[in-house]
Image 1 (tube, one colour):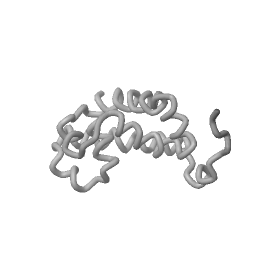
Image 2: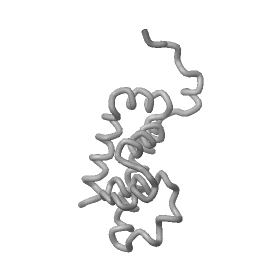
Image 3: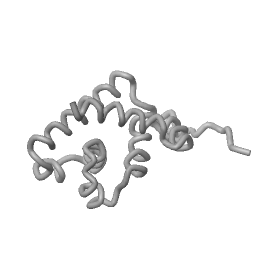
Image 4: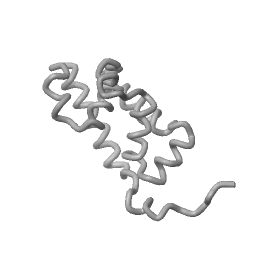
Length: 113
């Protein structure tokens, strides 16, 4: 039996709107382009850890992910809550992060163009 009581904090941490999701995607694509053009040195210690791991994941920079002790599951788990909010992140985590994985795959296809 699962607890169907809604988490009262979920309303305080909502998911991003469609416009904001697109803005985040555009930001990550631009950051990927910057890293591809200039390398990691100018960005790794300026951006937040979440931004660094997202860009590293998108660019398949496994060395950068290893340096911050992250992998695909931890990156997607971290971002599920950023993208979809508390309730949506919990739902996506329970569904093996499918929604977040799809969002990142779509973002990766844009970043590598």
